[in-house]
Length: 541
Image 1 (cartoon, one colour):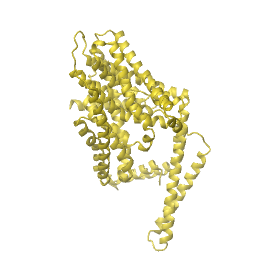
Image 2: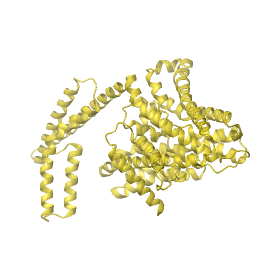
Image 3: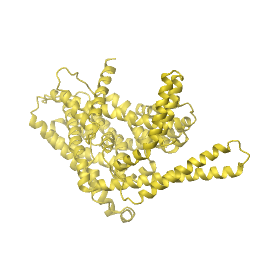
Image 4: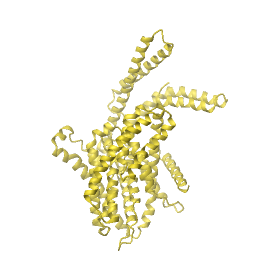
């Protein structure tokens, strides 16, 4: 009950900060981390800790499934080479670099603990990347690569972490055993994820009750994730693969009512989890620092600065070397098929290596150690370093990323893509309406004079023709533009909805009057209110 109360309090803080800073250009995750850190200095403020089991066994499968189920496998498949090089190769590269530097700084810690730290801080966090991208319009290719990396790199990092931690505890390690176990994990989880995706997708496509389907969708990531973890895997890859299968193959077979709820449920759930994780990162900072206060402050800053520099610079080396130049230099067919991208692209990918709550959760899973001649528990020092790296990358890279995008002109690419995306949305909608009109006209010809619903068919034809004219006018107007900003899109939608909103406001006022006069019950009121909300959301009469 106490933990439940604590989380209620945390969500209250999130709601307050989210409302106060709703117009801020700074991503909310940064505000939460900084606010959490400042709140931890209040004398009567309770000390709060991030439970590693809660993050790794509850939060992580939900977040991985949410991202994969709403991502396009077609787009990820097109970028599979850079995603694989970042989610596996980059993780191994940074793990080794950090381990070498950490061992040079504190040799008495030993190589196993050095590799433990390297594995923990090696993966950029999909939570941080997606949260930052909400405020920034990244070019589509960059976003797909970063999102794909964030989905899969935790599997590689947690596997390396597990073997490094086992070596630190037992003082034994087999490279061949770790390598073949890693390959077996990739193959096994991929096959398992594909099978479970199709099985669960088929089962869920037959559920017509919306409430039952909502429960089923929340259980889905755990049904896939937890058995794999019990068998010794990470569960991340299996959950992501199953999410891709269900999201890309079965979404169209689900009921419209469930799809409508799902589009709100999962983003809200992901937002709540992300917010709690980053608030707790800030709240943990002071307590962690107090436990290692015996180490001189300048020494701690040397550790943090050195390892953060390795993490940031190492990513630049890997992206420019292994991801961009080396493959195209060695493979002419790749250079021809996928030429060198604009130099801004690898720079943005390199600078987007934000670390997040998953790294902290892994650090909290480290048991206590006792090292002769060392006054501080290595666990406390590692946690401090991980929290510091998370905060530094969030503040340094997160705050500067929008400015860098503008200076490099990458934001204009994002605006151009937004224009193309908006145009394709309008054209797709127009094509859908044309198909529906064609069917209605053909059906009307076949049944003319014999169908009792002829007047209703004529009404539908009139409505669709009116909507098509409206869309054709909007498409013609868009052809005169080269970019499409989010501000312009919102203004356009507001203009399109202004007359409809006036009509619906009249209906809503009449509905309120009927309710106050007790002429309808609450079920009727809510049903009619939902109809009006649907009209506003989807611009229909």
